[in-house]
Length: 147
Picture: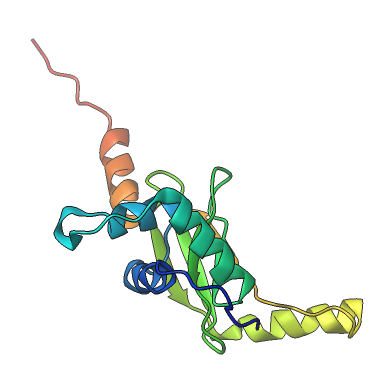
């Protein structure tokens, strides 16, 4: 893991935001940092720069839940997570998945020791409880009223 050498006042703010938000896009971090109750303003370019530096230092990892943009979360060694992503509302739920480590070791077994795994992501896509309930309510056929 690289150390951060550049002085950047927004780095600890972005880390705090990701800790609080768990998973967030750059836009979500920016919005959270600039909410009215904070009485500060952090530029979007500072957030992008901080995310880039934190990722390069190995402190955060990108998560790709959809094609449009990456979300970021803190890297916590030994804390393996999987994610359930709702394909309707894009809500993300964390799943405790301690069995991801064997998958990472399979990479070395199949590709050789020269390959080094930095992190892994396991995502499950489907409908969350809310969207599934809404879909079921919409699928109920309307009863035919007699006149």
